[in-house]
Image (cartoon, rainbow, N blue to C red; front, side, top):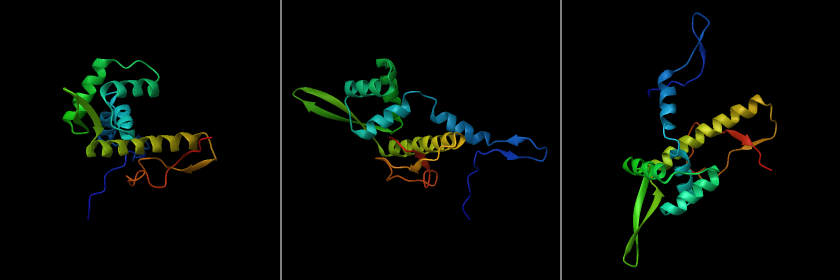
Length: 156
């Protein structure tokens, strides 16, 4: 029988206190260790971009300045981890780098989307929002057990 991963939910122990799976929490925290990784992966999921186009897209979506050095370091780290791929396109004599989402990047993005879906579900449940609809989106093709049957607030 396959090993079932422990779910990081609060459980009563014999003393009546709540406990949580710290290892899982550390794995989740590690996903968000670098601030620009999730938005970069989300932006590249829409379409491959050159550096400046990606920079501009991030600033528009995030609504604040994105430092060139921070973006360069993030892209370097994501490329080394094979989450982002670099293709060189010739433009005359110049070679232009195009950044795109790799297969590992799509998996990581699906994890981010699952976390956001669960967070949204829990947030709206606390607010007693009744108008919820099934999750849909451009990356719905990659479904996991975590994202199946989750609901988000209906956009107007």
